[in-house]
Image 1 (tube, rainbow, N blue to C red):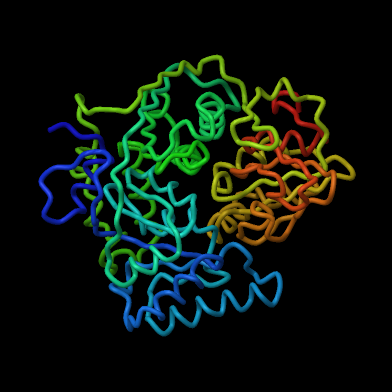
Image 2 (image 1 turned 120 degrees about the vertical axis):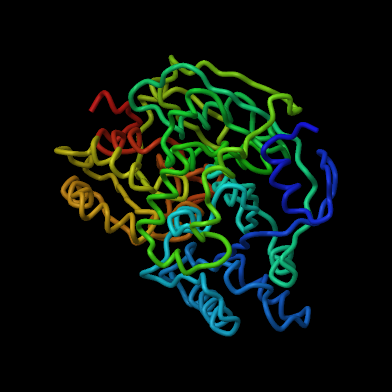
Length: 439
């Protein structure tokens, strides 16, 4: 029987099953279960209410306090304390405190905790990010996460797969963020409802890992259950680099252990040629310019050249979508030798502590500081209206984040536009939404 990559992963994780099909309910074994400082406290409460004493595996749970940390107020401090105490009580290995942590969906791949063929669940909707590595990863509620901590299993309805193929040659300043915004603009915020979005084609094959993460990260903005890209040489080169950077991986068991990331398994992990898809869409993106999502939906997308009269009060460069090192390099390239427009706030948020250190080493932080940006610690910060950059009534921001709903970044009377890092950086310099080539 022919299967998509998503169906193959789910079948592999469902003991006793010989075949699988979309719409079927399954009870699947998980490789990693994630929660953060907003979602973990409820999961901890439910775990304790159930009478459970020990988590199923101390190495297959990750707790990352990244949304409101460093604590913005007493409530967030107490939320983080709950995580800290639960991690200590349960001897959870993958708990990351301030100074070690980062934005969860950038941190876990960086630490080698996710790889091809894994099944990952997280109490955060952007858990779909890890599909860039060839994993099936999806968000779910805190009570289901609590259940996964007890048993090591979760229930799923096997999703249909929607195949999205991209051909052509991308123009300068156009990357993964533009591809996913363009796609969401085409199919809508419910265009892939409860479907696995499989990104493919020659453009994806040439796309760097950070751009792949950005695309899979925003699958949820089209209603997708998950996003996924077949692992290839690019994927395994990334994993090899992660392993070199994390010597402790050699001692780990479970997710992240180098011997579980062998090339043959990953390279065979691809959809069958005669796999069945709910829908197949093909895009020629040769003429695509940088894309911008306008208020108040990620699907309200226009080319950057159509928005040159939009003034901005704040620019945010960071988030689990575009806060990785290549994103900062791109933004710094635009900002080099320029100054942030007077009266405008430009906030740069490296996605992890390691990204921050690498940005310092490469001189990127100095470039941002000289331009007049403020550099934040690694946190979700203003993306969800948390802290470090909320918008006031009537203010407008352009951000490399993933959502621009009403009130998402502060006041319900504010406006958020979404773009890639180069457009955001150019807009910070000009004080209005600007194509990078005009800086």
